[in-house]
Length: 388
Image: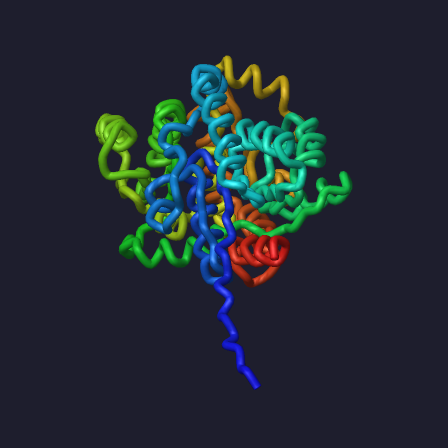
């Protein structure tokens, strides 16, 4: 009887196109890629930076060329981004790509989803990080319903929005819950015993730092007069560059404030501070992690503010307030970002113990993740299951 050798089947690698357009999106995509590599044989192609390239992704375009801040800048970048969009569609066709993961970057990615589905409606398109449909441009929901196979969202209230619209959705939570402990281990300890300690976080971009730092420091000057032992901590996103130089030069003109500049130590600053004076954005979620009472400051150009105010559909702009559906963090917008207002709110937080403790109690109730697993692992596992 003739025996036949059983040939070992080599599993063909699954190709996944991943599109993101900025650093924060690359970090999210990186976590998903690392988890997918542990689950199966994958080949990655898309847009990204050095981190994704080091993980073996074939880079179509660098995110450094795609990062756009503000409406005016987006208009200037339109011809380049339109060309890139159709370049990606061509690659989908030539490479016979069947699965796509879009990460954040909604203005570009939703248009791309439409063009890819026009090319082939059977291509699976997954989307990680919901566009802020709850804040403005709710009509994007229709586009998502038509072209996206599944949404992976950071916040529980977003899940409820998509479920009402009949869109497949999974609440995976926010990855910072897992990132923060890891990042904190890299930052040196601070030995400061004097109190109160007030963290001043004017943002990471020059446009926001240049608008917020001076009113924050003017408020600090008033607070220093009221609390002579107070210490003010200002983290800089980098230890070189335009933002770092601006912070140093501006702080140098405030000789009577006990202020320390701590490059690349925003997490340690949050951990050590009693209260925070902070720019609106993702950093406010990090403040939630540390259960820190905060004053959220938001100031943009009047042109951008006019456009945003015409479109915005929510009562709040601060993420802690959106997550709790009530104002547990004071929001100061545009002209409200004044030394007097910041001083008044900071004094209230420092002196009214029951007020401060009530805020801390509410911050502790905010749920950042649905379970103990890393959000990126949940996304990777779900995609892996769906495309088998």
